[in-house]
Structure formats: C-alpha cells, structure tokens
Amino acid sequence: MDYVATTNAPGAIGPYSQAVKANGFLFTSGQIPINPATNSVEAETIEDQTEQVCKNLKAVVEAAGSSMDKVVKTVCFLSDITDFGAFNEVYAKYFVSKPARSCVAVKDLPKGVKCEVELIAEL
Image 1 (cartoon, helix red, strand yellow):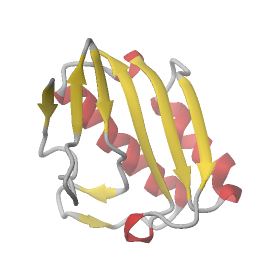
Image 2: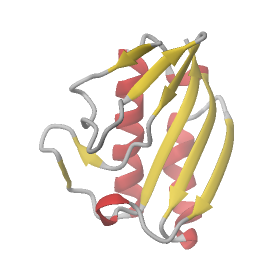
Image 3: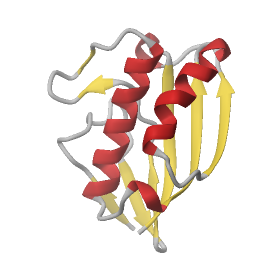
C-alpha cells in the first residue's frame, strides 16, 4: 500500500489518509468542501460546495497519478436529499465517465457541510 497526500486538497482532519493506493486502485477518503488554500469551508450553496468537493477529489486523484475518467465508483453523502438534483448538475461535470455510484442522505456531515464524496479509481 502507498499513501497519497497533496497540499492541493485539504489535509485529513482525523486519523486517516487522503487516499491509499492498493492493488491497482485508488481509494480516497471522503472529501468535504474545505478550500485547501484557507483550510475552511467557504462555499454556502450545494452547488458551490459540490464544486469544491469535486475539485478536492480531482486534486487527490491526480496526485495519485490517475484521472477522473478512471473513477469506477463513488459514494455520495448529502445532508438534505432535496439537494439531489442540484448536486447532480455539478457532479456530472466532473464524472463524465458515469462511474457506479451510491448517493444517500445522512443526518449530519463534518463541519455542518451539505455534501461529502469518496471514490475508487483505477491507477
């Protein structure tokens, strides 16, 4: 296993890695809409938060030597399922290869954000 870390995405806020490479795949931790330049959540709308989450994931995927078109699975968490449509509008810009996906509503997310996404990609 190899661990992936980049300053172009937020650092872990707990005892975990941004991502791990294993057996030809990349497994990312969930990304929330923290701006890595300021280490804070600045985006307020679901669209802006989704955009930041996708940028963070793209940075981790690229730091691992992969690309967004090699993503095979995502798991998406929304704090409000009524944001599903707006979330999908932004998500679709980044995941054009249409990977397998699960998307669920949860009670709460870290730092009170509206969305979190993790993924698995080929290396």
